[in-house]
Image 1 (cartoon, one colour):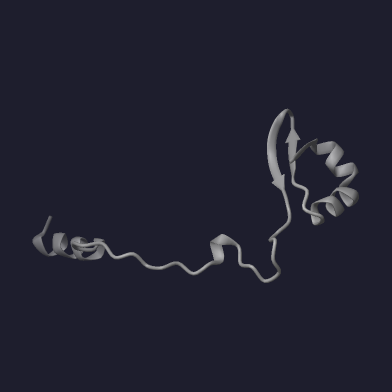
Image 2: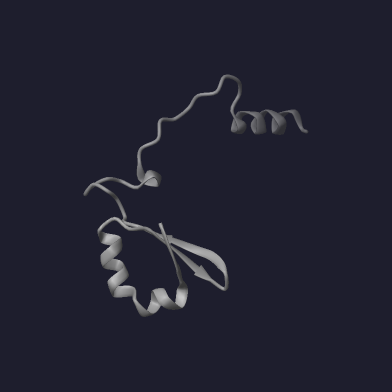
Length: 77
C-alpha cells in the first residue's frame, strides 16, 4: 500500500487510477490524517461487495422483541 497526500492524489489522479486498476492500493492523507483507502472495487468481475451478499438469518431461542413489547402492553406495564 502506498501513502499519498490528498493534494498530490488530486493532481495525479488519472495516473494513480491506472495503478489502482493494476492492483495497487493507496492510503490518502489529508492534514496529516488518513482519510481514505483506495483500491479496486473487486478482484473478480461480478463479485458482490460484502454488504450485498445474502445473509443467513439467525434464530435465537426465547421470545422475540415484538412479542415482549406486546406482552408488556397487555400487562399494562
